[in-house]
Length: 555
Image (cartoon, rainbow, N blue to C red):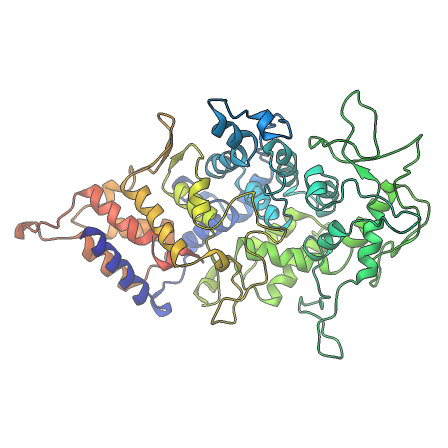
């Protein structure tokens, strides 16, 4: 009966929320919003620093914090049956820990909840959704660690440096077929693999179509979008990227196709000092005003061809617009204006000191833009659905939770499997138009009535119990130290205002407050049996707010 009542109240809140009821965010509320966008969630202590802190100062301080890297893991045999024999008593755990992304997933959640370098980790997580390498194919966590550390270390660095490190990473080389990419044979039967070249252009740098200076897509005379590149460019890049193989392990002799080695960047195979598996012919690249290296000269080394090819891509005018828009969509709102995208792209093109590709300057522009701050929270097309990982980490951080990081099954049930994207397009490909609207909302691709119920059940478990792990003393739970003292029957508004500030940054409508307050109060003199103690009142209020439509959308 109690659960039915809670569900009824929750549904009433969802239907009664109206835009006109929402309060305009004040400075402290906007500070909470900023922290939601720039981290894995604000904490009460961090929110309370508002009087002595500001976004600019916080961003600069975050840049100086050393990166929280993923732990280097040992490699296991390619065969699971050899690495984890069937007869081993720990067979299931062995496979999970050494042939799945599980160890990285646990470390991801621990860092997201506890690590101090929140900005770097949030941006690295975002970049990992743009530059996808999936554990669906790279099944050993030891193979994925170096790639994830490239994203963490480069999240606030320069995009050109990041692009080269990603290109030469062995996990990426395996996933998109650049490793052991052979030069064309004389008889034409062997041709370079075009997979990485194609995705590098389409997903990692310039996108499918040419942009105008304001970020809109250029339209040709026939009314169709103008492609940003053609097949000739893909072929040119594919040929430019030939000759690379896995790094030679210590004391081994280099081979044209070295055995797998994920701990070091890929290397060029050389036979008697000559990169004999690299195509030495002229290669056609991107053409645009002021382009660098539209053609790669003949007889260049594999290293020179790769660097010049990446420079050719890096200086294309699309890059800042394409990457900038995605950073906005992952951090702030799924439907940025062209002006917002352009301002961010300008920061990418020049950080104010003449440097192109400064990711810290680009992220700073994303988070401090007028469209990211202030009254834009009132717009009906503003914000983004909290994807499962952020839904969970935000709750745990704001509620001062403790966790062993074993949360991947919860996130997976909600439709998101960290580090295991189903394809190179990620967990929820973009662009994606929300059904029945003209709005983009890529995260809604993994949202359904089923996953919404799973989210609510997760909150129910967190609020009324805890998430238990197998090992004693582990699991995930939240703290009630701040909530219980506020949940008095005398003045329920103290609790509501706390939850309004911390979870909804001041946007709770008046009608919503009335409904929740009604569920928390009773007439003690009338001896009503529905009266609750402080803990129960706190639980009811938290459950109703955390499962509300207002909380599901990050605004």
